[in-house]
Length: 364
Picture (cartoon, rainbow, N blue to C red):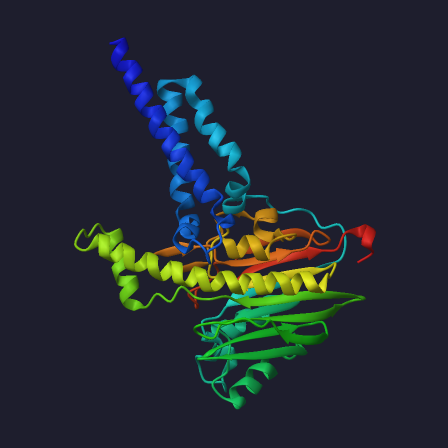
């Protein structure tokens, strides 16, 4: 009997170590350059699976061998930073001074989906106007005609007198609407397969200049057929699983490869500016455990990890649930609150907003 018990303990310990190492590999996958190892760099997508597996071992050891609980706890401790970046435990804080509210939203072109002569009937436009945000950073936001653009601008003008439109081509574009003056707008130069892009704005917020970068990084390029394959795999269809899995992984890896160069360009542009007050936001098309998030976020804080709670899912279509929309702020800015707003589901993304505060000693 004792021999069986020892054997089972050894077997569980071995399985725990294997799962733990996979967990750490996924946790530190953002340090793997996709330009060199694109497939391995995608391991971050599997992070929640390995995290849950490690947590299961905590329960298993508690039930059968309590002293062995130190093993999974050790893995959690080593991967703690990635864990709290992926699953936020920050929570709302009390503001101490003047604040601004910033909102980022991939609108999926829905701001122009109804007749522009009836803007109040467009749920997307109503939401933007009533959001009470000081600055809106919008992706997949481009008017089909000049008349449509002017109509939307007019509808939002009372709340947002300053604006910038950045068509990226192929039906894509960025928009920035602000209550504060937009001093300049500059495109960050990088290549894209499907006309994604990033723009850098300098916005005069009271007496200070905020460097704001609005991003829509390379999409994973999954078409309707790919999404159908993905859903069939979730439902347990075994036919062609290996081939389909490789196909989807190849697509993810190719997009990750392109995004890596884009992230490097954005990070370099931010570094060159050397601005004290910096915010990078938008649709990164990548999770918090990714090369793009790590590189652009170097020297910045993830607003949701700082002041949000939970997974913060922003993409919610075709049974794909990920946080791929982010707000990153420089340490000179205190994140008071950050939330994913699920009150509107017009787009395939939920909007993310945060309350940012300049420390009192900096006299906001």
